[in-house]
Image (cartoon, rainbow, N blue to C red; front, side, top):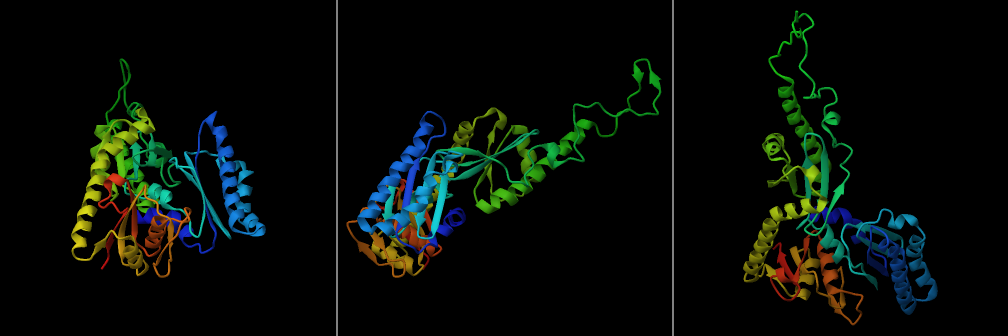
Length: 382
């Protein structure tokens, strides 16, 4: 998770300004529901505006809401439309996230951003990529257990064999070469069969094609994201691809089907069936490590103690309940928890942010998978 979250949220975590505005909304891709997108955004904008005017004088409130108000008039905000939208803003900073997953509606004004939904979406705990490859095409998907989106492969990734091997491509449908020196036979010119047929050459081309795709995928997608890669291909191509692959993120199991004949949702279901045991096994290992660490003072489920340790960069891994909320904030310099009645401040978000700031890993986990009922479980570095 660390690579993916750090890449997406570094700018957000670096912001020191206040107030911080966090707007989240689900969005629709198709009409007629698509028409609700700008209406919902403006309604959430009204909520933020009202909160700002309650807490600040008119000039400060108007200055804070102005960047988000400008977005409301920008047609690009919902083009293209995905499944969710997050807009984070503070003085001098504005960031828009178009999300491949729906998120609950919320409009929050606080001293820090509400980032737990983004951590959950961007974390690699249950996120993966799928490479669909055949002799004729390359398809790339990215997502998690809930949604899988087809992506445009990076500029360095060939889409077809002819694109990968423009000079050497052998079309197996063409007949073998004809020796121009051959004598005429009763049925026309005599065909001399070369030591290697075009079909043999074509099989060699397939290997070379897979090798080019593998190297490009590793460079442009796997290493930058750190995500596990599932292969989707006909059974006869699995051994060929694995024989040339040097991608360390390629998982051992694969989807045995022509990716051209599957929808994105069918690929998602098959990929998650392969990866879910690994996901559950990792959570189980972390649960066991947490329980073993408690007796040695190397793990804790007490939020104030974890906050204090996080401020000293001691928290290596933090599990956070996806559903927990508690009003309060955490001082990022000292780790002191300040409990208050402001529902827009959340100590679980504050702890997650502090751990990420100090280089730790944060996993947002469903309630039923949490090792303790407190909503947090942290494993210390020392």
